[in-house]
Image 1 (tube, one colour):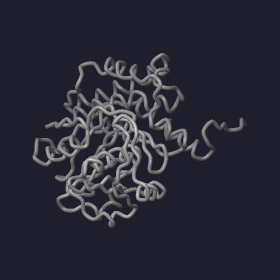
Image 2 (tube, rainbow, N blue to C red):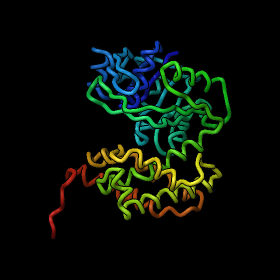
Image 3 (cartoon, rainbow, N blue to C red):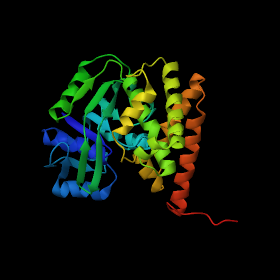
Image 4 (cartoon, rainbow, N blue to C red):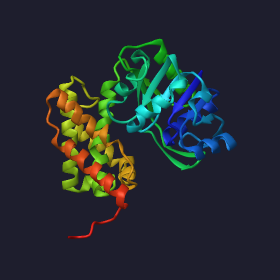
Length: 317
């Protein structure tokens, strides 16, 4: 199978490395020129939880070089989805399966605006982490499972074929008839700590120990859970608050990618995580005041850091 990885950051690089090492024809598509050049010159070095290897995927910043693929995996940050899929158009044929493996809400809908909606699959990476060491070099921090489904629901031979690709590449795979309970269940973890860590500078364990920060986090979880209930989505657990507490206590030293983006003054995924819940709340008539505040506050901090640098302060009047 010919596979395209749209977005060759840390997660996309691990996917590409393991799939290429398993014998698949993999094309990585990204505008990071140094990364593309390093991969084409020396291969892609993958280290960590999945073992150490140097894989040989193709890499390009011009989607036309790859041509049409059978499976396209969208691994960009949520705010990059539209631009990335548009740029990858030469890779996407009339029958190309397009699998989103991204955080937050709205990614399926963004992709369905650009390709045939029936070609879109939805996936969630569970317990998965990766970080870039440098161009052509990625560290795989951890892996549990890749969960996938038809975005429209139901089982299909296509999903089973895609699942086989992941299994061949060393991943545990869950195939679902309805992926949305999985999507919303993972959202609870993201929404609990991403914005709170970004605003306070605390690590996850410090958030848990601070009643004010933890209160903000839990208000966000309650609002997201209320939206899920209003949509008729049953989460994978009965008590979101207890589940989030159990999950976060396992990663006390973690800092979410939203924190790193905010510190660097980059646009983060706040719009698809907390903002996604706000959008759903508006449609459903569910109040989401804390999530709305988080969107405004994190966006303001990102803009301040973009203009003045993290840690800067304005001169008092």
